[in-house]
Length: 126
Image (cartoon, rainbow, N blue to C red; front, side, top):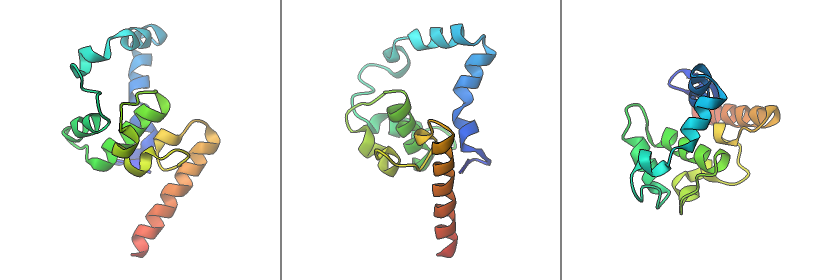
């Protein structure tokens, strides 16, 4: 699956890459220690739809990309405001293999890529 002409796993690895370039663990630890409210504002994570709506306002971020990002936050990072699965749509489904949010190892990456290829074949067949 590709996001704006680059492989999806590269796109979502960006924050990790930046942290590594800033000095690895210490930079990541500093960033992780910040209060989420300082970034998002009071009550902004009260409902899963709010981070989705905020993400969709960014240039180049439509509903699909915003849903994948929300699923990634919920599944991989434990950021799970009320209603996050519903707001993430099919990408938030437990046990799905639809996006980078479901990639945890080499096997799950293969499953996500196979699902993406199947979806692309179905879309071109229509």
